Length: 294
Ligand code: NAD
Image 1: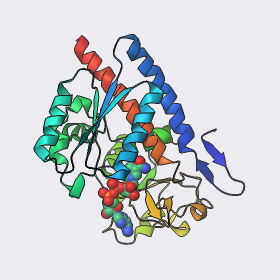
Image 2 (image 1 turned 30 degrees about the horizontal axis):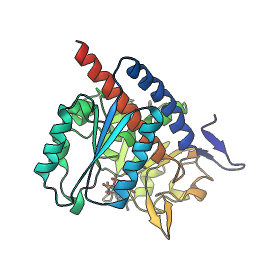
Image 3 (image 1 turned 120 degrees about the horizontal axis):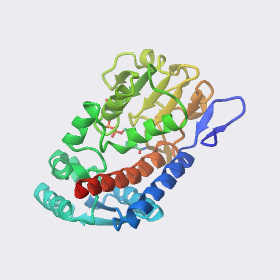
């Protein structure tokens, strides 16, 4: 498998960039079909304030849009913009036919509650999958637009030929962005799912059972070699800055010695997330097209 590179005597490194390129190529074809119908997909991002990390993530998303042929634009609101102004901006984008996907880049300044803004996004344009209607559909087993990071992981497992049915899966982290929606997606595919978090007693006792282990805690070095079942597939979602370097939550070199395969940081889950956002923007446009044609 080209997406999994072998290092002699160890587990495999899951090449998130290669997988993301495959997904991007598929999305580019779908975008081409939409363009032929006169419906070029459009993605609008909103940044509130001047957070450099948010600006960087949005730049990466816009570059991906350029590569697959999705039109993109960004609205930058002032740091002091109130929730009403954010909601007004979202409503304006909801109305526009040339905007098929809307993404509010989080976090909001001062870690303000984003829930009212998320709920204002038209569920049909909610390419991040955080709207309560889309979250509810996911939980009910009818996946529509869903959060991109967990969807990217599930897509990668499918692409690598790792079936989730009956599989012992453990997720470390129970956020609305990663852990909770991933648990629902894995249950929808008939995995046996445990979700661990900061209040979990004896984390290692859970992680050692995992045939598929996904770690999204934001704690560098949280998962050590003796916490991983031999032959496990390990997805490291964490993004942490340590001594000027970007690292994940998994002790990569050590865990690679026991696992079947591990995603690196950077170059693992991150590119998959961006690529899945492109795919979902195409999906949103296709769904809107079907509604308009009814
Ligand atoms: P969050 O802070 O909302 O949630 C963290 C979760 O980890 C919580 O459930 C918490 O209980 C749990 N946790 C914290 N410390 C723990 C510990 N010691 N033991 C067990 N559980 C612990 O974070 P989030 O938004 O889900 O993001 C998690 C990490 O993933 C961050 O590093 C974030 O930057 C990264 N992330 C990466 C991507 C990507 O595309 N690669 C996307 C989203 C988030």
